[in-house]
Every structure is written in structure tokens, then in C-alpha cells.
Length: 139
Figure 1 (cartoon, helix red, strand yellow):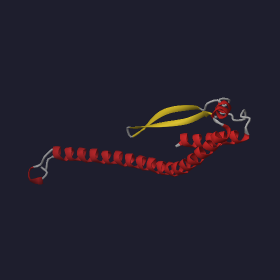
Figure 2 (cartoon, helix red, strand yellow):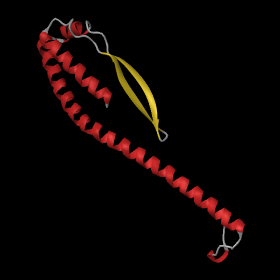
Figure 3 (cartoon, helix red, strand yellow):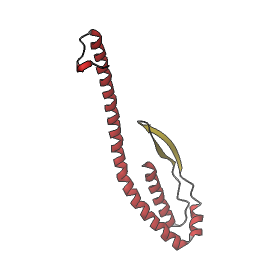
Figure 4 (spheres, helix red, strand yellow):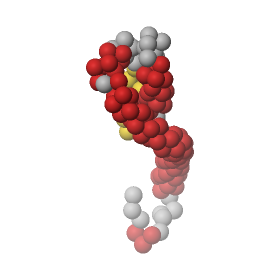
């Protein structure tokens, strides 16, 4: 709807069109504000996860050093046979959408039991690995 010279004709039809346009613009503004609020909430959640991620990265680095030490001490065959006694972690993988952006979500269904590992140092390492992997999947 265009008006010559920026002036609005003083008719009832023009007033109705302007009122409808104003109503449409207000509804659009409300929708955009709701989207903004939801996206701001998601950004805040991601900032918390970012802090957790730095912590997890440090733990992964420490864990890898311990794995290398145990591999050097016990050998790969012994560590492999001990690791085979522990069942794998069972996870659930789902996708969800935020404003049209698909984001994966991983949740742990069952934790492996490390009690079957006979070597105490390998069992402690497996417990640490389980904890780090669980935190990593929660991010």
C-alpha cells in the first residue's frame, strides 16, 4: 500500500488497511521478541556448557596421560583383556530443533560396571574414563 506524497487518504478503507497493517506489525514484533528470548536462553545454556567443556578437556588430557602410563606399565595385551571385561556404555541419541536449527542430544542409558576389572589401577582409570565420557556426552 503506497501513499502519494507520504500522505494518507482520509477514507474509512485507508484507516482499516492501516489498522490491519499495524496489527500485523505488532504480531510480528511479538513473534520476534519470543524468538529472541528463546535464543538468549539457549545461548546462556551453551555458556554454562562451555565452562564444563573446558573442565572436561583438562580431564581428558589427564586421562590420556594415565592411559599411556598404564599401557607402558602393563602392556597393550593385558590392558585390552581387562578392558574387554567391561560392557560398552549404552546411549540414546536424539535430535531437537531450536528455531529451525537441529541440535543433537546424547543421553546415557546405562553405565558400564567396572567392578569386573581385577587390576586396581586399571579399574580406577576406567572409573575416571566413565565419568569423563558421561560429562562429555551431557554437553
